[in-house]
Amino acid sequence: MEKKRLRVRTVIISDVHLGTPDCKAREVNHFLRVVRCEKLILNGDIIDAWQLTRAGQWTKAHTRFIRIVLKKLEKRDTEVIYLRGNHDDILASFLPLDFENLRIVEDHIHEGLRGRYLVLHGDVFDTVTKNFVFLAHLGDWGYRMLLHLNRIYNHWRAWRGKEY
Image (cartoon, rainbow, N blue to C red):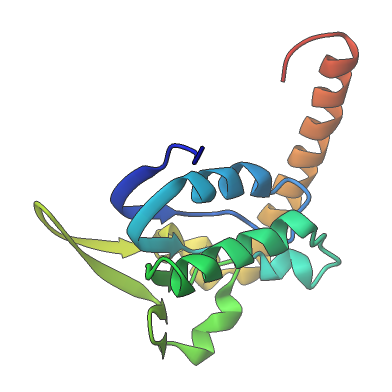
């Protein structure tokens, strides 16, 4: 018996942060396996190049995410739009790139049923990210420390029998 599939025209996913220990790759992989779409928009920070250059953690679940997206491209004929975010800004010097049904771009105009929509990663509105890169990296470090404390807190809760 085949699993029930959700069929939609477009899916937009943002900030997966593959390469980080707090990435929810398993959850997003499950979602992508049960959804069928004509267009998949990956709206920035899908791969966290900042973290990978600082000894990030790439897992099988992260590789599985890439495989699921490639399978959608190849076998499901899904159009995939990858927008650059601040954590994958290494792509900026190569944009735009176009590989058949895969486009890697800075921004995208989505044609919906009720109109046209500009899709872009939110970092374009962040003056700190654009003008004070050192502060952006410092903020990223602080955020990672908070996520680490959150992991410790969640382990403590689980030890006490509390839910996540």
